[in-house]
Image (cartoon, rainbow, N blue to C red; front, side):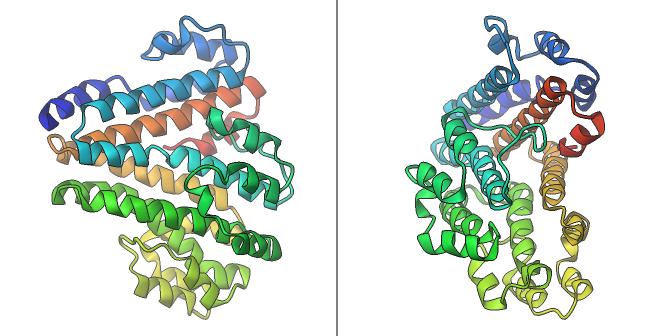
Length: 333
């Protein structure tokens, strides 16, 4: 079953768009984007639709992504299928946490400025909430947001930082993720962590820098660390927290120095995009080494997710006509 799934995934991988094809979408208008996508694997979700605005196009793109994930899950052995199903929740969680950050800064989520995909089932909550407490109340019915504590909400409001809420959500998510990863074969687990570990490490690194960047106490920052680590072990994270200056802290986190650099200029969103780019770079590289490992299914889902994110950026750019340069900053390559 696993070999059959891997072989099928090789075929699916060939249908993903090239970087040049995605970049070309930044040079056309909204109708042009749709026309070009009709000549690709997206024909199946666009041909029978009358796309009137960008929300309808993004919904179609989301449908294609979820169809791809569902198909791979249907082929995969049980342990890998459960892991992939959970892994695919990342886009939703990322959208929710972006909304948290924006509401804390006094803004509403606006795809013209931060063109992220918004899952349809959460669209009302994310786009209509007028303040942080209202958003949390709207999303608490769903896991992992049900684990956001009142104390974390109060603290986030008191210190004007999303980190307490992010930590509640991501700790809950990655605890369950760790359980599923442990059930994977050893080599598969190693391949998965080379990609997923970037996201885990970068969040922990941001937390480790928070005492210097934002003035939080070391004790508070320690409480936000995720239980799962990859290249940055807790000892290195604690060293960064205790550093006397940014240079010393970055030295302890040097494996991700280039990704963390924008934080020094207050560009947290750039750091998140750079982390996605590193995940994509690793996934593309590992396609060769994991060609006949069950991890190939994970790599396909990862690259399909990156394509979905990139196409959402292209869709928003063409519809709202913001600059090509701004759109390029949000692409995952």
